[in-house]
Length: 125
Image (cartoon, rainbow, N blue to C red; front, side):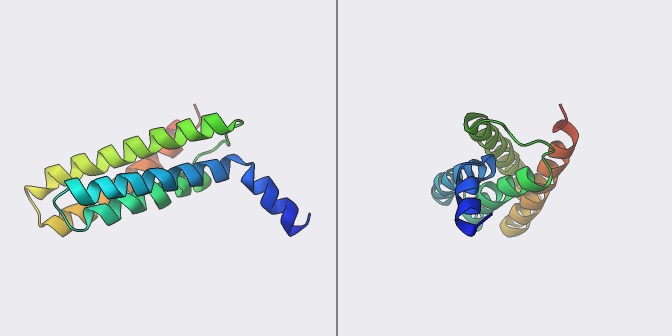
């Protein structure tokens, strides 16, 4: 298989759809986070979670590939929603106890790990 054929196959795969959708969500959510959330690092963590975390969890932890592109888009949107909601809730709760950056970093790591654990546990169903 030539490089061109592999690239064409990748562009039609669910992996590409997940990555592209996650990047679009990451840019939109990152812009909103920079505007709405109080911590200076929150926007970066939101972009990392949606743009890198979701495709990484799909590629490395999710046990089955999606057959259709629409299913891959729906999975990506749902995963982004769950991860980003988890991050915002944890950041809000931890800000009362910790410094802004520390609460953001802890919320980021916790949201990512919960995403990995959720994919491993519920991905078989």
